[in-house]
Image 1 (spheres, rainbow, N blue to C red):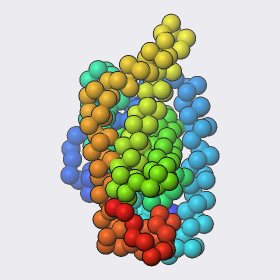
Image 2 (tube, helix red, strand yellow):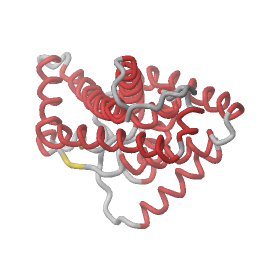
Image 3 (cartoon, rainbow, N blue to C red):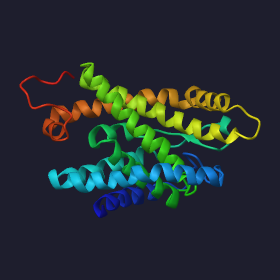
Image 4 (cartoon, rainbow, N blue to C red):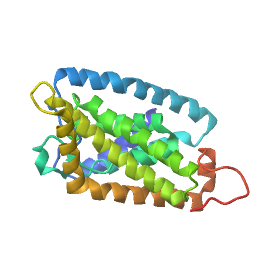
Length: 255
């Protein structure tokens, strides 16, 4: 774990040295009332704990696993550090790439949740991105929903015998969509008890995300994940074999 945190710290230092302006992103500090703060922490904590267990177990079987976790963790951190303000949400959240689709495909969804949690914690502490009270909610949307939706999208695409690129594309795109669906749900829940409609509020917030920037970003992220998987397969196919993404047989993977 210390190596993973060291990589995150290095990337954070380089990023912080290159920027002078901090933009609030994810769900911002102070948006969630205390009951939702506690709820999202309670939901997210077990997933993070299981992620730690998976890292400890897998690093014994695969010596290169921990450096791979650190590298992908740094990638998720950097991807999610490019905020695009959504003016219609009045500062409650911003749009940005996520990267959890790629980390979930390569490392598994639980480890991807852990990676997202560390990235979000560092951003909340040092970059004023997100917040400590909204950390549980942001882990739920970007970490849990983003990771598991991307992972299962990839597996379903594999079962349908789609080429590797399209398996990665669907993983990246679906992960991005579910991350912002989760954020929309969390913000939509805030109208309950205030005379508003949860479904209407959620649909409107999600629509704002899709119509502004995330509709394009989810496609771009899908393309990036697809190209990364194809690149790794062409240059270092043994990595995908060790991670269980390809099978050791005589048939080449369709890319």
